[in-house]
Length: 454
Image (cartoon, rainbow, N blue to C red):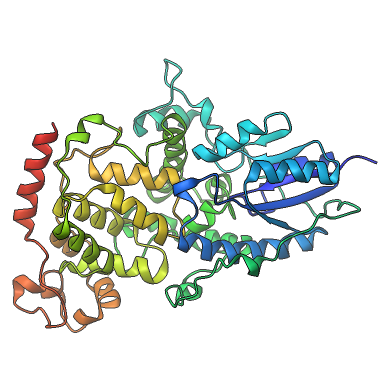
């Protein structure tokens, strides 16, 4: 009788293209374990929106496991200690898991090195293998892509097992409902209308996107038609893999190539936080430590107005309200609202990083930190600080009128000629706020602050 093995699950809640699951099944009877660990991540414990999605994802994955003859064990606490205790409890000596790159998971993996078998499964390739000529991780995406491209396409996705062997005796499992992952207030009431968690939903979403990917290059920038793939939450929780996405996209058109580069960006950001684990805490370029961010009561009021979608800039307010209502925001609008916070309001990008971390169902440590610093102009690979997105002209350029009408109902009656800047047109309704600051004034203030940092 072979000893049972543990399958340690984190953001890899799937049966298809799951190398850790297949390796564990080959080794013996498998005990799949998910641990809700709020200790290891510290300040980056899962945010509220992620926790809502996790409840649905775990529920769906438990059903998938039952379909192949096994079950999901749930535990809550510090991962390393729980896994060590489980090994002793069931008489096992081996843990299989998919490799992760968040600093807390790398620390936990190192602590389990004597019993842990790691597999690459959440990325296009093993991040450690994509290096500069000097043997160091890439700090610029263009160089990373040039080094990654010859390695593509990635291996074909692995099939799901038809069945796996269950142990004779199961360890105790906690109840999912007892974890309290769903909010007690009505904040996430609309989430079920936006998200269907689970591997089947992820594969269906990929199939839908594949039918329209040719238009992605243009559609991704148009908030009113929401031409995004809507795969980010499924990718974040590992309900689908980058390899599956890569191979599902047809041909080599412009839309396909653009989306594949965005999938590769996820690999790049994992490499950044692997090399710089505290990237979400500090500027990628230290000279921006001198940047005179605004602080104090007025700055706090402006931050709250931004969070609530009450800035007087319709495209910004629509994005922030979409985020609060659905746990997601259109990609083009994410850049606009991030630029507005860091340049127009001259507030520390880390305020935005924390707000997104709590409100996004797809909040990824590497993506969130690298993207915020890219827009803020403070990162190792980022826009120049002096590049300040003009939200009013961006809104008009990308046809955001219907998007604004949906998320800012106070403006629903305005036509395209005035909806992007109702203040300037003299059409602002009484129940909609005036601009929190003028665009020219904000731009001049931001440029002066950037000059001080340089």
